[in-house]
Image (cartoon, rainbow, N blue to C red; front, side):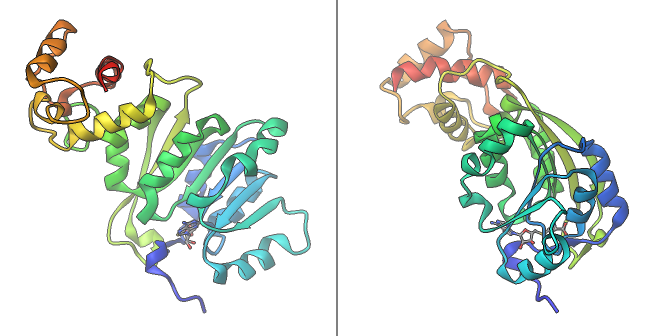
Length: 273
Ligand code: SAH
Protein backbone atom coordinates (compact mmCIF):
# COMPACT_ATOMS: atom_id res chain seq x y z
CA UNK A 1 0.00 0.00 0.00
CA UNK A 2 1.46 3.36 -1.02
CA UNK A 3 1.91 5.97 1.70
CA UNK A 4 0.87 9.33 0.28
CA UNK A 5 3.53 12.00 0.51
CA UNK A 6 2.11 15.41 1.24
CA UNK A 7 5.50 16.97 0.63
CA UNK A 8 5.34 15.78 -2.99
CA UNK A 9 1.83 17.14 -3.49
CA UNK A 10 0.39 13.65 -3.95
CA UNK A 11 -3.31 13.94 -4.72
CA UNK A 12 -4.12 11.19 -7.17
CA UNK A 13 -6.93 11.70 -9.61
CA UNK A 14 -9.59 9.01 -9.36
CA UNK A 15 -12.39 10.37 -11.51
CA UNK A 16 -12.43 8.94 -15.03
CA UNK A 17 -14.75 11.67 -16.28
CA UNK A 18 -12.24 14.35 -15.37
CA UNK A 19 -9.44 12.39 -17.04
CA UNK A 20 -11.56 12.13 -20.20
CA UNK A 21 -12.28 15.87 -20.14
CA UNK A 22 -8.55 16.61 -19.82
CA UNK A 23 -7.81 14.37 -22.82
CA UNK A 24 -10.60 16.02 -24.77
CA UNK A 25 -9.23 19.48 -24.05
CA UNK A 26 -5.71 18.43 -25.11
CA UNK A 27 -7.08 17.05 -28.42
CA UNK A 28 -3.97 14.93 -29.03
CA UNK A 29 -3.16 13.36 -32.35
CA UNK A 30 -1.81 9.82 -32.29
CA UNK A 31 1.82 10.53 -33.11
CA UNK A 32 2.02 13.73 -31.10
CA UNK A 33 4.59 13.54 -28.29
CA UNK A 34 3.28 14.06 -24.76
CA UNK A 35 5.05 15.04 -21.54
CA UNK A 36 3.43 14.11 -18.24
CA UNK A 37 4.77 15.60 -15.03
CA UNK A 38 4.19 13.44 -11.94
CA UNK A 39 2.28 10.40 -13.24
CA UNK A 40 1.71 9.13 -9.66
CA UNK A 41 0.00 5.76 -9.89
CA UNK A 42 -0.64 6.23 -13.60
CA UNK A 43 -4.33 7.06 -13.60
CA UNK A 44 -4.01 9.84 -16.18
CA UNK A 45 -1.10 8.08 -17.91
CA UNK A 46 -3.38 5.24 -18.96
CA UNK A 47 -5.68 7.71 -20.73
CA UNK A 48 -2.70 9.48 -22.32
CA UNK A 49 -1.33 6.23 -23.70
CA UNK A 50 -4.65 5.55 -25.37
CA UNK A 51 -4.49 8.95 -27.09
CA UNK A 52 -0.79 9.09 -27.99
CA UNK A 53 1.88 6.49 -28.79
CA UNK A 54 4.66 8.70 -27.42
CA UNK A 55 4.46 9.66 -23.75
CA UNK A 56 7.38 10.75 -21.55
CA UNK A 57 6.56 10.84 -17.84
CA UNK A 58 8.83 12.09 -15.06
CA UNK A 59 8.13 10.94 -11.52
CA UNK A 60 10.19 11.85 -8.47
CA UNK A 61 8.86 9.29 -5.98
CA UNK A 62 10.99 6.13 -6.34
CA UNK A 63 8.29 4.07 -4.59
CA UNK A 64 5.87 4.68 -7.44
CA UNK A 65 8.21 3.54 -10.20
CA UNK A 66 7.88 -0.26 -9.91
CA UNK A 67 4.10 0.04 -10.15
CA UNK A 68 4.31 2.30 -13.18
CA UNK A 69 6.85 0.01 -14.83
CA UNK A 70 4.77 -3.10 -14.23
CA UNK A 71 1.70 -1.45 -15.58
CA UNK A 72 3.05 0.36 -18.63
CA UNK A 73 6.64 -0.51 -19.51
CA UNK A 74 7.27 -4.22 -18.87
CA UNK A 75 6.36 -6.18 -21.96
CA UNK A 76 7.09 -3.10 -24.06
CA UNK A 77 5.12 -1.66 -26.89
CA UNK A 78 3.11 0.75 -24.78
CA UNK A 79 5.05 3.82 -25.78
CA UNK A 80 5.84 5.09 -22.28
CA UNK A 81 9.27 6.56 -21.57
CA UNK A 82 9.44 6.66 -17.77
CA UNK A 83 12.01 8.98 -16.20
CA UNK A 84 12.87 9.01 -12.49
CA UNK A 85 13.72 12.43 -11.11
CA UNK A 86 12.81 15.96 -10.16
CA UNK A 87 11.11 17.68 -13.08
CA UNK A 88 12.66 21.01 -12.08
CA UNK A 89 16.15 19.52 -12.47
CA UNK A 90 15.44 17.70 -15.71
CA UNK A 91 17.47 18.77 -18.74
CA UNK A 92 14.45 19.40 -20.97
CA UNK A 93 16.54 20.28 -24.00
CA UNK A 94 18.43 17.00 -23.84
CA UNK A 95 15.33 14.98 -23.08
CA UNK A 96 13.19 16.42 -25.86
CA UNK A 97 15.45 17.87 -28.58
CA UNK A 98 15.41 14.70 -30.70
CA UNK A 99 11.73 14.04 -30.17
CA UNK A 100 10.83 17.56 -31.25
CA UNK A 101 13.03 17.28 -34.31
CA UNK A 102 11.47 14.01 -35.37
CA UNK A 103 7.87 14.29 -34.24
CA UNK A 104 7.17 17.97 -33.65
CA UNK A 105 6.52 20.02 -30.55
CA UNK A 106 5.39 18.42 -27.34
CA UNK A 107 2.03 18.71 -25.63
CA UNK A 108 2.34 18.75 -21.82
CA UNK A 109 -0.59 17.11 -20.06
CA UNK A 110 -0.44 16.76 -16.30
CA UNK A 111 -2.05 16.90 -12.93
CA UNK A 112 0.99 18.64 -11.50
CA UNK A 113 2.31 18.71 -7.91
CA UNK A 114 0.69 21.88 -6.54
CA UNK A 115 3.58 22.89 -4.31
CA UNK A 116 5.65 23.65 -7.42
CA UNK A 117 3.01 24.92 -9.86
CA UNK A 118 4.63 28.33 -10.40
CA UNK A 119 8.19 27.00 -10.91
CA UNK A 120 6.81 24.43 -13.37
CA UNK A 121 5.03 27.11 -15.40
CA UNK A 122 8.14 29.32 -15.48
CA UNK A 123 10.21 26.31 -16.51
CA UNK A 124 7.84 25.52 -19.41
CA UNK A 125 7.91 29.17 -20.48
CA UNK A 126 11.72 29.20 -20.42
CA UNK A 127 11.73 26.26 -22.83
CA UNK A 128 8.65 27.33 -24.78
CA UNK A 129 10.18 26.46 -28.15
CA UNK A 130 9.87 22.75 -27.22
CA UNK A 131 6.15 22.86 -26.46
CA UNK A 132 2.97 23.43 -28.44
CA UNK A 133 0.64 23.64 -25.46
CA UNK A 134 0.23 22.58 -21.85
CA UNK A 135 -2.99 21.27 -20.35
CA UNK A 136 -2.43 21.50 -16.62
CA UNK A 137 -4.49 20.71 -13.56
CA UNK A 138 -3.55 23.11 -10.79
CA UNK A 139 -4.98 24.76 -7.68
CA UNK A 140 -7.75 27.20 -8.66
CA UNK A 141 -5.98 30.11 -7.01
CA UNK A 142 -2.97 29.84 -9.35
CA UNK A 143 -5.22 29.24 -12.37
CA UNK A 144 -6.97 32.51 -11.54
CA UNK A 145 -3.63 34.31 -11.52
CA UNK A 146 -2.85 32.93 -14.98
CA UNK A 147 -6.18 34.14 -16.29
CA UNK A 148 -6.16 37.56 -14.59
CA UNK A 149 -5.86 40.89 -16.37
CA UNK A 150 -5.11 44.44 -15.18
CA UNK A 151 -7.30 45.63 -12.31
CA UNK A 152 -7.90 42.15 -10.91
CA UNK A 153 -6.44 41.28 -7.52
CA UNK A 154 -4.99 38.04 -8.94
CA UNK A 155 -3.05 40.01 -11.59
CA UNK A 156 0.73 39.89 -11.13
CA UNK A 157 4.07 38.57 -12.33
CA UNK A 158 2.68 35.15 -13.24
CA UNK A 159 -0.17 36.65 -15.33
CA UNK A 160 2.20 38.98 -17.16
CA UNK A 161 5.01 36.55 -17.93
CA UNK A 162 2.52 33.88 -19.01
CA UNK A 163 0.50 36.10 -21.32
CA UNK A 164 3.71 37.24 -22.96
CA UNK A 165 4.47 33.71 -24.13
CA UNK A 166 1.11 31.92 -24.17
CA UNK A 167 -2.53 32.27 -24.89
CA UNK A 168 -4.30 31.09 -21.75
CA UNK A 169 -7.58 29.17 -22.04
CA UNK A 170 -9.75 28.47 -19.05
CA UNK A 171 -10.80 24.81 -18.96
CA UNK A 172 -13.00 23.63 -16.10
CA UNK A 173 -13.12 23.39 -12.29
CA UNK A 174 -12.52 20.18 -10.38
CA UNK A 175 -13.74 19.50 -6.84
CA UNK A 176 -11.49 18.07 -4.10
CA UNK A 177 -13.61 14.90 -4.11
CA UNK A 178 -12.14 13.84 -7.48
CA UNK A 179 -8.78 13.08 -5.82
CA UNK A 180 -7.38 10.75 -3.19
CA UNK A 181 -6.25 12.00 -0.76
CA UNK A 182 -8.39 15.10 -1.19
CA UNK A 183 -6.64 18.46 -1.51
CA UNK A 184 -7.95 21.29 0.67
CA UNK A 185 -8.64 23.53 -2.32
CA UNK A 186 -10.56 23.38 -5.58
CA UNK A 187 -8.60 22.77 -8.76
CA UNK A 188 -8.85 24.04 -12.31
CA UNK A 189 -7.66 22.74 -15.64
CA UNK A 190 -6.05 25.41 -17.78
CA UNK A 191 -4.55 25.20 -21.26
CA UNK A 192 -1.54 27.30 -22.20
CA UNK A 193 -0.95 27.55 -25.96
CA UNK A 194 2.62 28.68 -26.55
CA UNK A 195 2.99 31.51 -29.05
CA UNK A 196 5.58 31.32 -31.80
CA UNK A 197 6.82 34.74 -30.71
CA UNK A 198 6.18 36.87 -27.58
CA UNK A 199 2.94 38.87 -27.69
CA UNK A 200 4.92 42.11 -27.13
CA UNK A 201 8.41 43.15 -28.14
CA UNK A 202 10.73 42.75 -25.16
CA UNK A 203 14.48 43.27 -25.22
CA UNK A 204 15.44 41.39 -22.05
CA UNK A 205 13.01 38.94 -20.45
CA UNK A 206 15.00 38.54 -17.23
CA UNK A 207 15.09 42.30 -16.71
CA UNK A 208 11.37 42.50 -17.43
CA UNK A 209 10.74 39.81 -14.78
CA UNK A 210 12.82 41.72 -12.22
CA UNK A 211 11.01 44.97 -12.98
CA UNK A 212 7.57 43.38 -12.76
CA UNK A 213 8.47 41.74 -9.46
CA UNK A 214 9.74 45.05 -8.09
CA UNK A 215 6.63 46.97 -9.14
CA UNK A 216 4.27 44.33 -7.75
CA UNK A 217 6.11 44.29 -4.42
CA UNK A 218 4.14 47.53 -3.89
CA UNK A 219 1.23 46.84 -6.20
CA UNK A 220 -1.02 49.60 -4.91
CA UNK A 221 1.67 52.27 -4.70
CA UNK A 222 2.46 54.71 -7.49
CA UNK A 223 5.22 53.18 -9.63
CA UNK A 224 7.59 56.04 -8.89
CA UNK A 225 8.00 54.69 -5.33
CA UNK A 226 9.28 51.18 -6.09
CA UNK A 227 11.41 52.62 -8.93
CA UNK A 228 13.20 55.03 -6.59
CA UNK A 229 16.25 53.60 -4.82
CA UNK A 230 16.24 50.50 -6.93
CA UNK A 231 18.68 49.39 -9.61
CA UNK A 232 18.47 52.48 -11.85
CA UNK A 233 21.27 55.03 -12.13
CA UNK A 234 18.77 57.85 -11.79
CA UNK A 235 17.47 60.16 -9.06
CA UNK A 236 13.78 60.24 -8.29
CA UNK A 237 13.17 63.47 -10.24
CA UNK A 238 15.01 62.06 -13.26
CA UNK A 239 12.85 58.93 -13.24
CA UNK A 240 9.73 61.13 -13.03
CA UNK A 241 10.86 63.17 -16.04
CA UNK A 242 11.75 60.07 -18.01
CA UNK A 243 8.38 58.48 -17.32
CA UNK A 244 6.47 61.62 -18.34
CA UNK A 245 8.53 62.11 -21.49
CA UNK A 246 7.67 58.59 -22.54
CA UNK A 247 3.97 58.71 -21.88
CA UNK A 248 3.92 57.01 -18.46
CA UNK A 249 2.35 58.63 -15.46
CA UNK A 250 4.62 58.37 -12.38
CA UNK A 251 1.36 58.11 -10.44
CA UNK A 252 0.04 54.97 -12.13
CA UNK A 253 0.01 51.67 -10.24
CA UNK A 254 1.40 48.28 -11.23
CA UNK A 255 -1.93 46.51 -10.83
CA UNK A 256 -3.52 48.60 -13.60
CA UNK A 257 -0.70 48.36 -16.16
CA UNK A 258 -1.10 46.15 -19.24
CA UNK A 259 1.47 43.61 -20.40
CA UNK A 260 2.33 45.91 -23.31
CA UNK A 261 3.01 48.79 -20.91
CA UNK A 262 5.26 46.63 -18.75
CA UNK A 263 7.24 45.59 -21.81
CA UNK A 264 7.60 49.15 -23.07
CA UNK A 265 8.63 50.38 -19.61
CA UNK A 266 11.15 47.57 -19.25
CA UNK A 267 12.69 48.34 -22.66
CA UNK A 268 12.96 52.01 -21.67
CA UNK A 269 14.46 51.55 -18.19
CA UNK A 270 16.90 48.92 -19.36
CA UNK A 271 19.17 51.67 -20.68
CA UNK A 272 19.58 53.16 -17.20
CA UNK A 273 20.69 50.12 -15.23
N1 SAH B 1 -0.82 12.64 -12.17
C1 SAH B 1 -1.19 11.81 -11.05
C2 SAH B 1 -0.55 12.26 -9.72
C3 SAH B 1 -0.69 13.71 -9.37
S1 SAH B 1 -0.02 14.05 -7.80
C4 SAH B 1 -2.69 11.76 -10.95
O1 SAH B 1 -3.35 12.60 -11.54
O2 SAH B 1 -3.22 10.90 -10.26
C5 SAH B 1 1.54 14.78 -8.22
C6 SAH B 1 2.61 13.76 -8.61
O3 SAH B 1 3.82 14.48 -8.87
C7 SAH B 1 2.95 12.75 -7.55
O4 SAH B 1 3.04 11.48 -8.11
C8 SAH B 1 4.32 13.20 -7.00
O5 SAH B 1 5.11 12.14 -6.50
C9 SAH B 1 4.92 13.80 -8.24
N2 SAH B 1 5.96 14.83 -7.99
C10 SAH B 1 6.02 15.71 -6.95
N3 SAH B 1 7.08 16.53 -7.08
C11 SAH B 1 7.71 16.17 -8.24
C12 SAH B 1 8.87 16.66 -8.93
N4 SAH B 1 9.60 17.70 -8.45
N5 SAH B 1 9.23 16.07 -10.09
C13 SAH B 1 8.50 15.03 -10.60
N6 SAH B 1 7.39 14.54 -9.99
C14 SAH B 1 7.00 15.09 -8.83
